[in-house]
Length: 121
Image (cartoon, rainbow, N blue to C red; front, side, top):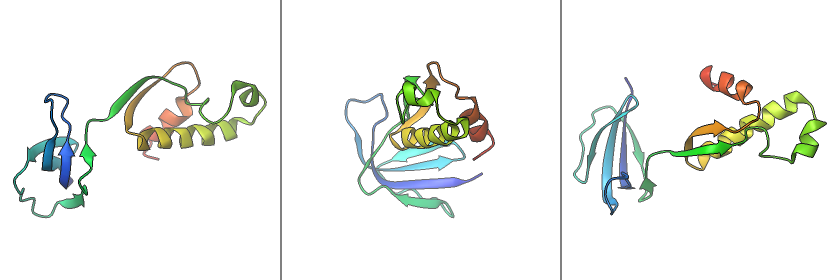
């Protein structure tokens, strides 16, 4: 199981009014094991310096359009499906980089993106 230590972050946990400042977060696998303002001994963990940034849970977008991010529907109708799939993958990447870890597509064909994600691509 991979272990990651994220140091020097301000943690927004969604429970407290204020950020937990200058915190360290230990993650084992896909679960947060420890959040502390004290030094955490993590052995051979991968260490990421958060550089004083804010660490928070992933956002959820309940109305997202996989295929409509890059152009209007009028252009989409007449373009190649392979091109759509590439654009959808780029859209998914940009959405993830904006902090959204969960999305619900509201009407376009997101199946190719889900299949690629499930395959680890």
